[in-house]
Length: 84
Image (cartoon, helix red, strand yellow):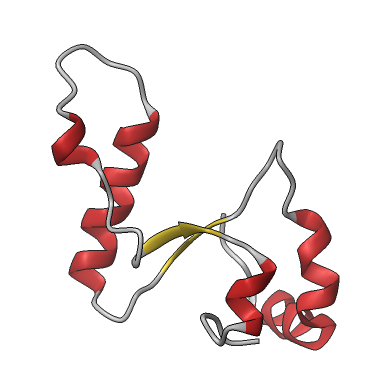
């Protein structure tokens, strides 16, 4: 899904209090830190593979770094883990 510049500015203006209700148990947000694009991509793929069920899965290889890929929580913004 692609977000337009207009949508991004609208999300920024609404602030975290307005965004939080869209994070639900049925459709949780998962965030990826992108300070290092290569590590971000590798860990995103690992996260996706860890959620799939398939034969021969090596659990050690598919575990993402939890400092790079993690589930959203309100603490992320309060703890300065994300830009608000």
